[in-house]
Image (cartoon, rainbow, N blue to C red; front, side, top):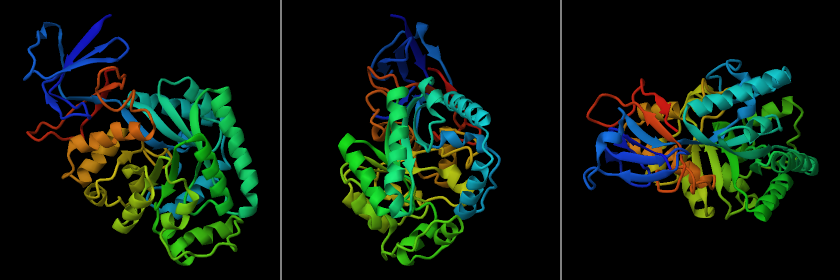
Length: 398
C-alpha cells in the first residue's frame, strides 16, 4: 500500500485540537492512516511533503439547491425574500432543460473544486439525479414539499413519493421527503411528511425564520407571505394565526426524535432557540450567510447561537442566491462579521457538524484513522493569529 505524508503549518483534525507542524499520513484513496504530533512522536521528514497553510477535512455543505444553478446572476440582490420569491417563480417559467442540466453539472464540478465532499441538497424535481449519481460528492437529497391548501395534501405527497422512488430505486441515491418551510405546508401535508419520516427514520430539513414576515404570519396573519400567496392563487382562508413563533406553531407536526435541520434562522431569537432545543431531541441550525446577505442583506445573530452552544452547520444555498458554491467563502464571511469566533469552531461547523447531521460522520468530517474525509489545504493570513483572510483559498489535496 502506497502512503503519502504531508506536513502543514497547522493540521485541524476537528475531532481533536489543532496540531502545529503536524504530519498527516493517508493512502492513495485518501483513507487516514495516522496523524503525527511532532512534539510527541519523532518522525523522519525525508519522505514528508511540506505545505504552507492548514489542512482540514473536506467540507460538508448541508444546504444547497443544485437544481437552481441555472439562475445564477438572474435574481437581483438585497431586495428581500418577498421579491426574491417572485423573481424565482418568474424565472421558472423561462426554464430550458438543456440549460438546467448543464448548470447542474457545472455546479457539481464547482463544489468539488471548492473542497466539498458531501451535500444536503434540496430537490423539487428529478433534474439533479443523473449528475448526483455520477458525482464523487456524497449527496443526501431532501425531496422538498410545499402545499398550503389542505385539500391538496394527497396530491402533493403522492408527487413527492414518486420523485423519492426515482431517487432511491432508479439512481440508488439517499434521501427523504421534507417540508419546504413552516408557513408553506398545510397541517394534513405536514402530518403525511411526519409519518413518512417516522416510518423510514429519515432526516428532515426545513427553511426557518428566513424573513421577519414568517413571524408575522403566525403571530397575526399579516405580512407579505399572505399578500404574495393571494396574488398567485393560494387560498389561506382556512389558516388561523397561532400567536406563537413559527416553530412552536408547527412543532407537533414534526417528529420529535428524527434529526431536523433548521435552515437560515436569520430572525431567530433566544426564545426561539430555547424552544427548539427543549422540544426536539436532535436539532441542528444551518447558517447560509452569503445567501442571507444576497437576499435580506442581514446576518443571523451568530453570537446568540454560539452562546447557546447549539450544533451549527453551514450551507451555500443556491446560485440563485449566491455568487458561488464555496464553503470557504461562507466561513470568510462569518470570520469577517464575527472575528471573536475561532477558526477551529467555524471549521467544525463546515465539516464534522454537517457530517453528523447527514449521518455521514463515519466517513467525513474529521481526520481520524479509517475515515476518507477528503483533505483540503487552506491558505492563511500572515499573522500570529490563525485566521482566514479575504485572500484565503482552498486547494483540494484528496
